[in-house]
Amino acid sequence: MPITEAEFGASLPVDSYGPGFFRVAGTVHRGGLLVRAEVAGPWGGYDDLAPLEALAGAIDVLFVGTGAQIAYLPKPFVAALEAAGVMCEGMSTPSAARTYNVLLSEGRRVAAALLPMPGETP
Image (cartoon, rainbow, N blue to C red; front, top):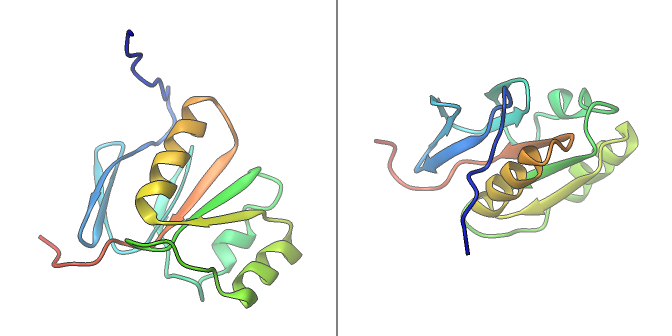
């Protein structure tokens, strides 16, 4: 079976991640990350709601990476996003990054808020 390379055009994919960092379109970001097709920047975790609420109407779904393992998203976090009109889906950070990339390559309106992977930062 032939393997087709994903095409992202000018969009920003998550290239890789490791303990405490993410590489997005060749640029390294330390700590939590909020990424969408046009921009990537820091995300302060579940208490940092303003940049996520600002995505209302601009995306169809927000993938929330909960770290190395899947975890329930805090109920107040989900309630605040739903009230703002942002649908979110919690999953482990590796799964959230992969899912974001797949849907991004399809041209979908997605974003990912990713908690960093644990471990020592290089």
